[in-house]
Length: 394
Image (tube, rainbow, N blue to C red; front, side):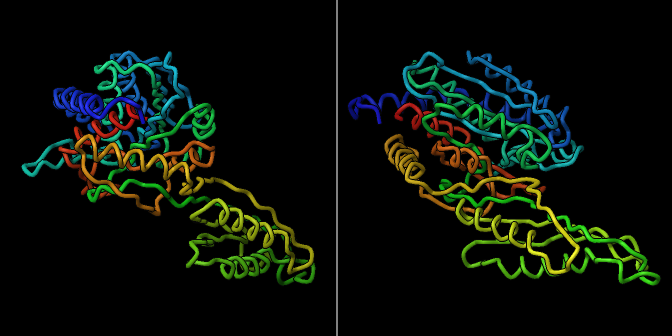
């Protein structure tokens, strides 16, 4: 926390609110522009269009901007402000893609209803959060804050968990030297800020047997499907729901026909975990089941197709949350409280890389990933004020 007197900090907080409030119309206009662009993860052109608009906004603020190709999905947009500051940078994280199919922006366009609710695809998850993040930086610029650099890392394929690109590696490479991170993911109406998230992933186990004609030479065959069944039962028995240890053999396949002893089979396993320790336990269980042979002549290999780390509630995370809570009370935002949620986010990769993060700093609302998604219009200003004040005071 900065060592300015209480009166001095209050003057800063009031100046932040004044500057953000004066630009509320601009915030709404920017949000409307990007919500009305279809940018589902696989619509790379749409993600690039959103990226282009945000790049222009960053440049207008005076940020140094880079657009990094992800090699398989939408780009990574990196914007740095106050690069000459004496302190370590604070990260502002977000994603530009949504879960919606092309055409949704036309059928369900941006609009604000009579109750002050903003509707439109991705308005809550999480295009509103991107607007909040940039508005907070603009406010820091306008009040003359110069000692804390802020780096935005906005990715293009978070909703597909970076499965087909280099986005995750690019993001991790940009974390170096950071003090902390605010992730402008979905905010909650009850003002919970996220200090813990489950991690998840997909692991494939491919079993190889010996194919043979089931009628003419069944004795020559070794069934990959039968071996797979042993492994499925073993893996399902090793899960522990009470501890948050989920191993779900959600998809199985194998064989080419009823008259052939199957020579290959595959298990696709969905995993969820509340901590990196339980993640490692799950991977050890899958590795053990993969290596264990029940039917002589079969073999198997394991491949981690995708992994998003859990966001562990570390001491650093809680220290950052307490800082935000203190500032929230002092700057007039009100009370916030810590929550742990099940959905994964990039905060897991950030925290596991050693950078404390608080997630859920974006617009407040409900219904994300559905056509009924909405955000509270009033939270545009409030959340930008909170982020800017917390960044200034860090």
